[in-house]
Length: 138
Image 1: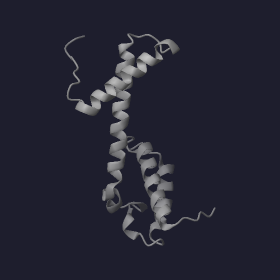
Image 2 (image 1 turned 90 degrees about the vertical axis):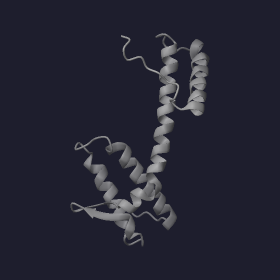
Image 3 (image 1 turned 180 degrees about the horizontal axis):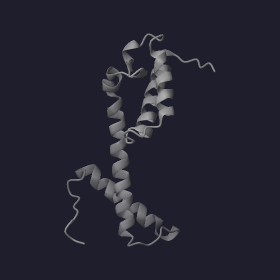
Image 4 (image 1 turned 90 degrees about the horizontal axis):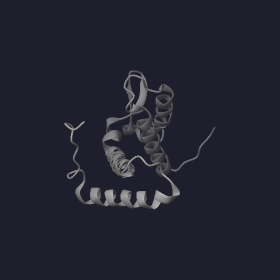
């Protein structure tokens, strides 16, 4: 297979591959999905012939994204995604909780969405500063 990319498109591809592997493997510890690491290494191996050698390094015999790549801002994009997803999931879970265990139906969908929007507005304004959990209550 031959894939033709501009230098800028290749750089975007590096970001996409890194983010994808990060999502799939970053929480797995020693139980990483090696096939994804191998594909990431294969894609990053093209950095040297593309004139981007600082974006790849060798670690334990494998090519991996370099520290320069990882420290170059990609984690800020990942963190922004994680923050957004955290607040959206939290808002949805709290709104579902507010339905008192009722299953989601067409009739209560608008009410649920209104609660989600209210929670998201709260989180936009205050983050988690006003979220409380009573751990002593059972």
